[in-house]
Length: 193
Image (cartoon, rainbow, N blue to C red; front, side):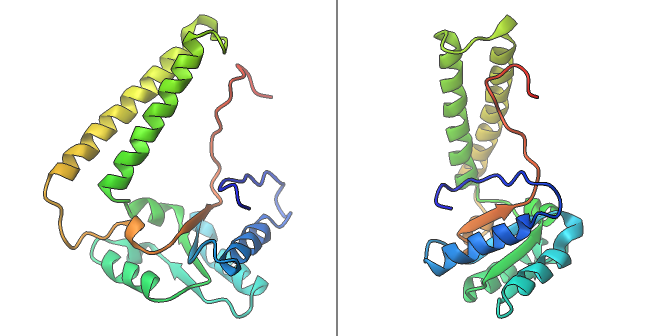
């Protein structure tokens, strides 16, 4: 619960939703987070919100749909999120990806990813990790180039005058984000079972 990243790799029907909701509510109770946000599959919006209320009858849940994250509505949405201490905020993946983080935050993230990838290149170059045929080096170099291009774009946006009315996710007041999306995982093994 305190590590900041946890994978629930259980089969369907094993109450992964309940584990996420209970963990978030416990962190909120302990004062570790406020306004936990759950980013869920598009077709699960209403069901997930109902599951939160089923688990915590008195929970105040804010359900965010696609109309709430339009550029015109973001400022109002962020104000709604910041003005009330919701027990849970539920948003779909597609809506969440339409609500950008500020260029400063994205630039910081890209810089961190580039540093991590450069560390991996160093490990490969020192022989700590084997790389048959240099495939891993080429993939890492390609990912670094991609992150550097995005970082350059972010720095350009930081230098440009920003619209004072633009509202970014990091200004919403939510301090934690839980996702139900499948993610890829990196491994140093050449094959995965």
